Image 1 (cartoon, rainbow, N blue to C red):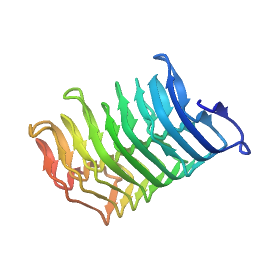
Image 2 (cartoon, rainbow, N blue to C red):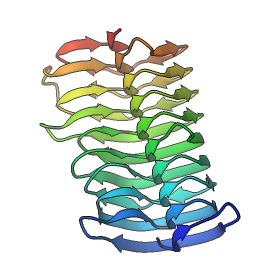
Image 3 (spheres, rainbow, N blue to C red):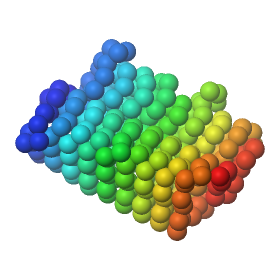
Image 4 (cartoon, helix red, strand yellow):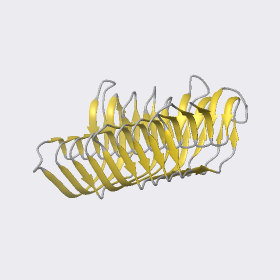
Length: 264
């Protein structure tokens, strides 16, 4: 970590720090953050700039993983990772994140699992008033989060989400896979990839309410591939979508829909 490797304990607090640094790791590096590698306490009012380069997984501009709380933090750090659980702010979250933002040039994943804000928001994770403005590029990536099993509310994504031609796949403007709850959030990100993409959530088995997507969804106008949706690519049998809309162009091949590609 730029300040500490492990911020441990509920009473441990990092407050009012500014970091401008480059951090580089080996291929196998895990739990890397420009404030803390792991956060179990509190991080409040941190500003981060620089580059986080060449870690394997659990990488984030502020923290690699968070099971405590992060509040009022800003990351402008670009991130390059080799694997999953990579986010512009936090790699893996099972705590709370409030009033925080990512304003970075790029979040890049070599293989899979990069997102503009948080890689994984687990079942106990709560994100409120989050903002990401960045360019995300990875196989299997989300503009804001890759996996959400917790709660995301009052949050938004701007920028682009892209993947290589093939096997670039499973790409979404806000969350890739949602089994939790997303409330009052939106994405204006443009989504471009070869196969399997959507404007807001790729696969939904949870709840989405009062959300929207306005970016375009296409694969370079090739009109090929499978499962496209302006809002959701696949809505599973347990998935519920209410009070939401999409307004971007959709250019797809099979199973394309202006709102939902496949509804189960």
